Image 1 (cartoon, rainbow, N blue to C red):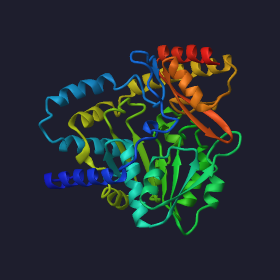
Image 2: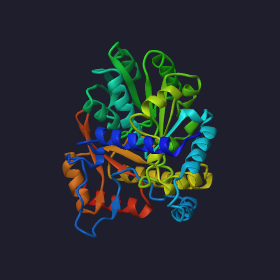
Image 3: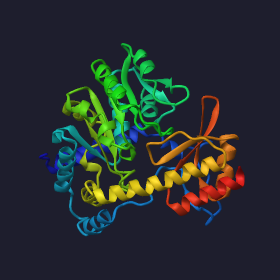
Image 4: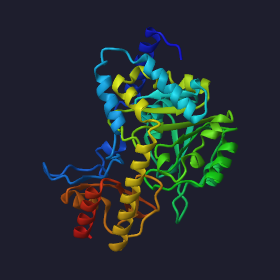
Length: 379
């Protein structure tokens, strides 16, 4: 991508203004002042932060070295490195460079998309599963859109694709899919999902949030990037916050049709908001298969330990394709959160289908052991 300094700065300014407008009065769900938000324990008493789905094993050694090297060039605008990263992602995903939009985290792209579709179709409706990750829909509602929630299927708590498709009408502005889903961890059947996207994208835009796709058994199999390659009206959001362990460095990207990305970029995204250190870290770790395999192996180890811990204490759970596990609890969610926090462990809680649920992120083995010890005390 050829871009001059003025265009670069303009992209960054538009991104900043758009996000500031979209997120006024809004914060990430896990930072909300709602009962589900973790309350900090007494100073020095935190044993395990298992409430934000972070990867405790990242950034990778290669990314850390790149950050150190990049910091020494912090006086330079990172134009060329952003171009390299965009090209690398495009090659890896098998799309054209103009089909990739970079941003400081995928969350900013969710907000930018929310704003674009809210103003492109004033008063339109966004359809999503319920519960699911809410950032896009919350931002859209703030800008005049309506939000139609479709309950998950009974028993296995999967996206109810048939019902979601049935709800599509003239006033629908977008269909949002979170796969694997947060907070349930459930992964949609890939054959059913691709068939759904084939049909729906011919009528309305489909936004697929694939933040946790790398934790599935086969990311390429479960992703719908192939639908983008077929020219369909599909957007796929990815993040470096999970498998790459870069949540605090803020890096993500959106894959879609060039004209759609150009329209969304007016509200946010683009390389102007990215730092030299973040871009260089992304370049270093994006194809670091050794670290990806390491992260997955450690995550699987923690997940199996958590499964066994829950079974030992008489709990069931939803099989997860992510770096967290959701399970039904036997007391009010707020009480469960407070009691676990008293043991130095932060977790999240939900209530749906008439049941309170706890979501536990996968941490290091000492962190998982701290959770197990705390659960034994409060159960």
